[in-house]
Length: 220
Image 1: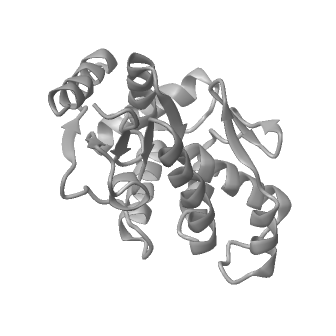
Image 2: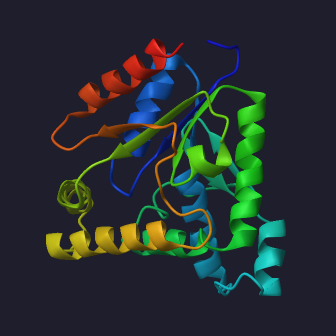
Image 3: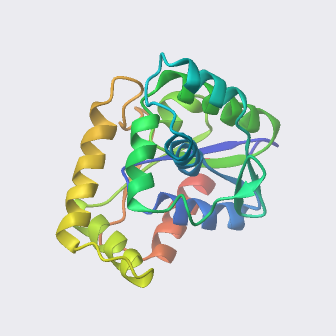
């Protein structure tokens, strides 16, 4: 394996990308870059500050020019503030999907992400890491699962947080998010031609992590 290497993990919402990527990063002692959290942070800030979800609006350009996002010991820092919890709501999930279709938002965040991949070994997860952000990544994984299983996982997480959404509502949110991600004009969700697909339906976290690590080690 080269001194610096990149692992791209793509897939739909709720497939377990973040959980798996964090575990793989720990096992390989490399940095995990949560790109989805970056879009959530921008969507959260746009909504909080009343910035229109319009790529041509001067307010968006001004906001992005004054936006800083970083990762510090597992925390996501937005303009100096830890936003781990406030960006993990269903509302912010939909806001992230909306803002990710805006070219100015994607251009700024992709530039940051590519810079990270040039400086150090990283693992990134998102919707278009292998197809756009890190096209030359040494390893590409497309992580997926049935909509029903993904909804069950998300529903359980929300229950543990005291949220009142029903399973049916969560499933509908998942399906809508899939549609938005796969049909957006700019870099839609799709499997890279050279990515290896891993279906997590019915499989535990440790089993999936081992599968991904085997793929990486076998391709060294």
